[in-house]
Amino acid sequence: MRRHRSFEFTHALCRQPGRSVTDGLRLEDMGNPDFETLCTQHEIYIKALKEAGVEVNILPSQDQFPDSIFVEDAALVLDGVAILLNPGAASRAGEPQVLKEDGGTFFKDIIQPKFSGPIDGGDILCFDNIVMVGMSARTSDAGADDLAKVVAKFGYHLVKAQTPPEILHFKSHCSLLNETTAISTQALMTSGCFEGFNIVVVPQDEPQGSNVIRVNEKVIMAEEAPKTAKMLRDLGFDVLQVPTSEVAKIDGAVSCCSLRYSL
Ligand code: CIR
Image 1 (cartoon, rainbow, N blue to C red):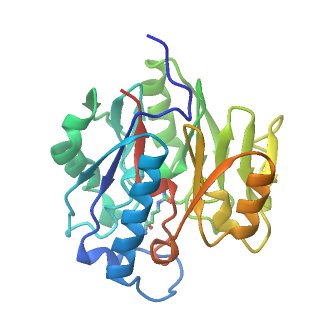
Image 2: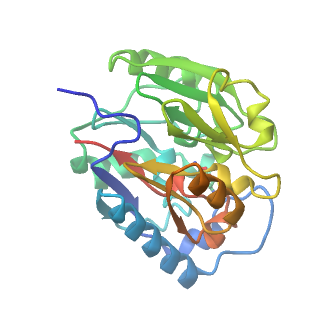
């Protein structure tokens, strides 16, 4: 079977926000998200995923886990198989188990490896044959070493990178646009992990523009990064912008609100 490219997807899994989302973790207090607005923005996000050509399934809200709408952090999906991870935040520790219970049937299979250290999906960037993992406050060397053995069975090679301090997740500041082009903040680019790549560096005042998802022919990104959107359109990318102001208050962005995969 031909393996899908790193940006080709047939499916996405999201989770309905629960009221407790307003208590989500944050590095800096910018006020609580407005629940109704967050739900409306989440619906617009789902519409964008559908417009990009994927079938979207939506899991029920899980109020005991305020950050559980950020489904990307709980698992890595390779070749349609969900690999449950080991969240670095104590309040999120139970999220992989919940995903297994209510989301397991949406994947080809679901596996739960043992991890000797934390590892969050927000720190994992997938290429066609490489899985890049950014060390961060949520992801450790030990977690990445354990994941390396798992992804090797799927034919992927794991490489480590550094997430600059002050940045929550590696992918908070970078994304892949295609196999040879990344989008990144200046801060993350200087860490050197994209050597040899074409890099689109986002304007200093639009760090949120570096978190995008390339889904088939579309690039889904924040409405709040208009200069970045123009740069990408000028480069020929087909950009869909969605409002992210409410998830941004709890350090969320477009990538973490879904698990994209192919069956
Ligand atoms: C957290 O701190 O875990 C959530 N409030 C935000 C997680 C965002 N996830 C991501 O960037 N992958």
